[in-house]
Image 1: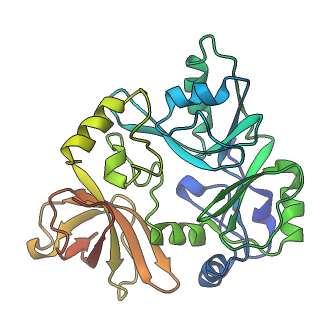
Image 2: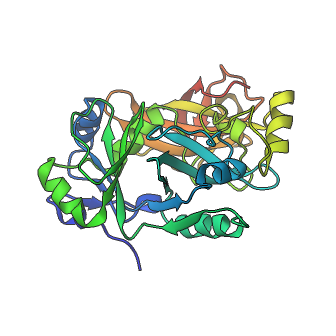
Length: 324
């Protein structure tokens, strides 16, 4: 059954499409909502995201064997970001996690929680761990950096430089909204994510994406930890320094009525409209200060100072996110 957040009944709420279907795209004023996040006010309903927990005495040492991040000695309440890779080093799952001292809390992309749980269950063996899908019981709510909103009781918080993710009991979502003012939609949240050059599974990734291409080395991949599935690819690319593609940030021509969307081709401006695509737009957004912006994945050898065209004919000036 398709999920629909109870906050979609709030005045002005317009339902999101694509991967954020089920929560509000906006509540009537996209740029005001962006400014609220940038100012550290408001909150974002991310209740469509999947929530898993891992408990048991071996949980951190066990996760350490499976994940790209070093988590065996993760201190309580310290946030971590990690990946699960295929045997060939391609990204399969992205986990945003925190451990409260007895349980590891994870949120992941909407609809991906069952596949992630199935993988975790298949790797339990003799370890004292218990993995569970808690999506029906807990909703993710995001508070921006600088927010003075207190974390409610009986709620686990995951604090990062970009803000605070709350694992809020789902039955209290509507009460939280009534107590903390008008929420901010997913479009505003995404615009600030694009501005921050932060990749997202399913948008910046495809079936062959490796961590180096998106700048996930360091933030989600620890290069000095032990073996995990896909580590050989990570080590090889790290040593050779030549990922096949790289993430770029694009400033798009603001005179266009529409802006390129996910999957639209990126070409060299000098090649004209019939030029060979050198990459594709992954996420685009209208930013309250920067205007139209986007992230794109392009071939490694595209010059960093090259003028690009996104979509049919939208001029795009690039900023380097991942060095070639």
